[in-house]
Structure formats: C-alpha cells, structure tokens
Amino acid sequence: MAKPIVTGLMAYGMSGRIFHAPFIHTNPGFTLKAIVERSQKKAAAVYPDIISYDSIDELLNDTEIELIIVNTPNNLHLEHAIKAMRAGKHVLVEKPAAATVEQVKELFDVGRETDKHVMIYQNRRYDSGFISTKKVIESGRLGTLQEVIFRLDRYKMQINVKAFKETKETPANGLVYDLGAHLVDNAIALFGKPLSYNKTVGIYREGSEVPDYFFFHLIYPNQLNVFLTSGLLIAQEQPGFILNGTLGSLVKTRTDVQEAQLDKGMMPDDAAYGIEPEGKDGVLTIVGVDNVKNTELVPSDKGGYMQIFDAVYHTVRNNALYPVTEEQIAWQIEMLEA
Image 1 (cartoon, rainbow, N blue to C red):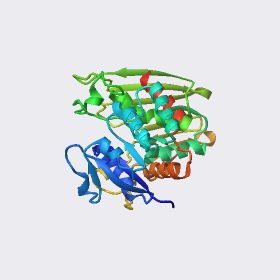
Image 2 (image 1 turned 180 degrees about the vertical axis):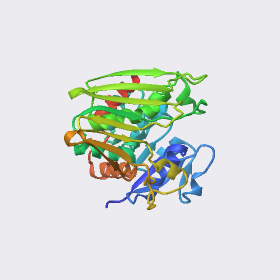
Image 3 (image 1 turned 90 degrees about the vertical axis):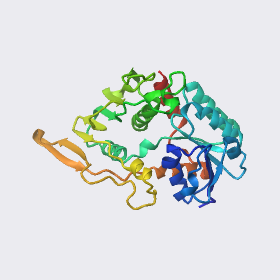
Image 4 (image 1 turned 45 degrees about the vertical axis):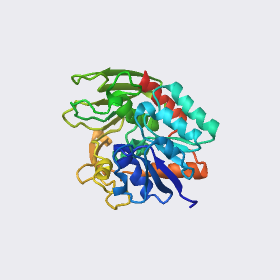
C-alpha cells in the first residue's frame, strides 16, 4: 500500500463524529490529522493526536493535508468543496452534493480544472439491508421486477435545531435533500436513470417551513415501477425494502446497525461492527411449480461503510473510478430539486 492519505475534517458534529472520523482513524490507507472545531474541542478525547483548528482556512492552509471531507451544512457544500480544491485538496463531499444540477456541474468542473478528485459520500449503498436486497435482485430469483418500494422513515415532531435543514430560504433544505438523497441514490445505484418520474411533497409538522414528507414514482423500462417514500411523522415502522417480481417477493425492514454502533463509540474494526441482530432477516417468497409458495429467510449482509473509504483511497492513489459517478449525482439532484 502506498503512503496513507493525510486527511482533514471540516466539522466534528454528528457527521464527523459518526460517519467519517472513525473510518479515517481505523483505515490504514488514511491518517486523520486535523478537524475544525469552532467552539467546543471534543475530538481530542477520542483522537488524542489530532490537531483541532479554529477555522476552515487554517485547515486548508495545512499543506500536508491531501484530502478534505466536506461535512458542513448542506447549503455550504459547494462553496467549501470548491475552496478546498482551489487550495490543492481532493474532496469527499457529504450528500447532498449541491442544491441544483448547475451547481453539480460547477463542482465537477472545478475538479477537472484543479485536477482534484470530487467524491460524493453516499453511505446508504452500504447498509446491510440494501446490500442483501441488491444480491436478491441480481440473483434473478424474483423474475422480472414489477414493483420496488424503498422507505426511510422517522418520527420527529419537533423542528430540527439545525436551521439549514428547516429554513425554506436556505438551499438544499428539508427531508427531500436529507433522506431523499439516500433513497434516490439507492434507486439510481440499482436501476440507473428512470425514463420519467413524479414527485409529491407535503408539510405536516406544525411550524415547519420545508417538506417533511415525500413520495417519488420512478418509471423504468419493462414496466418497472420504483416508489421512494419518507416522512418525519411515521409512527409505525414499515418495511424499508419491498420487491415484487413475476416469480416472487422480498420484504425486509431497515435494521442496519452501523449508525447506532458508531454513535455508542464502537469502531469499524470491531468484530461485531455492522452485524444485524438475529431475527431481522428478510422474507423471500418464491412461487414454484403448481403455484406453490416457498418462503425462506434472507440473512442480512454485514454493513460496510468502510467500503466508501476504500474506494476513496483507490480513487486518490490509483486514479480508480469512484463508484458514485458525476452522472449519477446529476440525475439525483435533478430529481431532488424538481
């Protein structure tokens, strides 16, 4: 392995603490050198050798750092990613990459101009349930797919204290750009760009300015219908994955444990990391001879957010193609902003 990629984090809030720092710290392909902490200095309690800068400018002026993780508020992703690339850094940008398709083009154009890699962080491709669902689709056991339903729900009546998520004047706001970025990416990762799509949004929480519910209907060739739904007032957990094909069906709840484990301080190199508890298997029903239905359980694969960082390493060091492409991000943002 070539020398580790010296990396800096733009923020140490939930995203930095849970989804980035543990992976950079435990992956031998990286060295976590510095984090921006404007007020409270918390990172050193977990990473005693880390440098805590007071500002993004200080971080970008560190000439040893090669890669910047842009995990600031959604509306600042474009500005901060461009600033990092112009400072000579590759960037891993939290979703959503930008607010508009035009901004996506600008982001990747600057990457080409500065000869720096632009990589977008789409971790839900590596949830345990999504990985196992993808395997069932690729096996062909369901026959020709007719209907695919992906859900990602919450119950949060209160307005989020993060203003950038809740203020209508702020670009890339609301649930569509938050959980919608995950679900649309899931569909694109599996099926590509739809032939057409319809989008419905709603606002149900008292005092909310931005959508807290959405429903996408994506239409693909061969009469495949993909439905993507999310809401912040869904009290009863519903299956996160429902697939119906001409030969069978798959139903699976969303029980990926990675975020909860990381939030409790588990590191990705722990043997128990990413393994769903027993009893959370998917249910696969296949129709056999004489219309006899055969049901079996589908164990979830181990969740693997570390695969993102392995891909980042090979992209930066070996110029490999990053799995989330510019074209896919443009399709995603087109649907989110529609």
